[in-house]
Picture 1 (cartoon, rainbow, N blue to C red):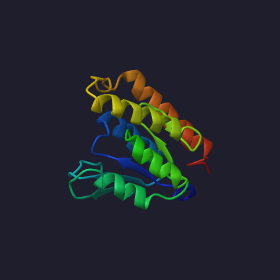
Picture 2 (spheres, helix red, strand yellow):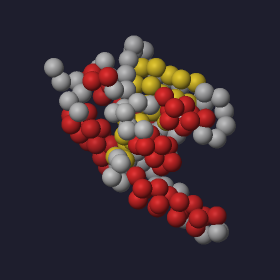
Picture 3 (cartoon, one colour):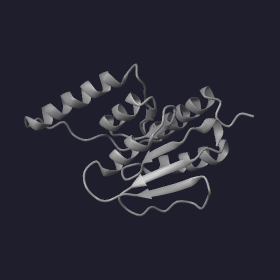
Length: 156
């Protein structure tokens, strides 16, 4: 286990191409990859990969990840409140579009998320996120590589 960190994935909503990038990166740097979901997942056979099946219901996977993460771990999620919870514990969060959430920027991300939620609850149509583009996938791969490189994960 490189540097003792783990990569946790909020897997129910994680796009397939992002999972593929994660499988390749985890193998390359030999870091455990734990996918948490409330449905069965297809995961390539590898002792580094683990799936955790949680019960259904809102935030069950998020609660599991937030309770299990350790300082320095990386969580892959588009869920900003989950990102806030793990950053509060000293971990990091990376969204599928390549934005890394840290102690320095999570408050702003939570404020924007809450503002948008307030708009939607007042009836304003805000639309959903755009589909994941090839540029988004590249941004995610680059941000993941930078994170792993900065922490010298996989270095001898």
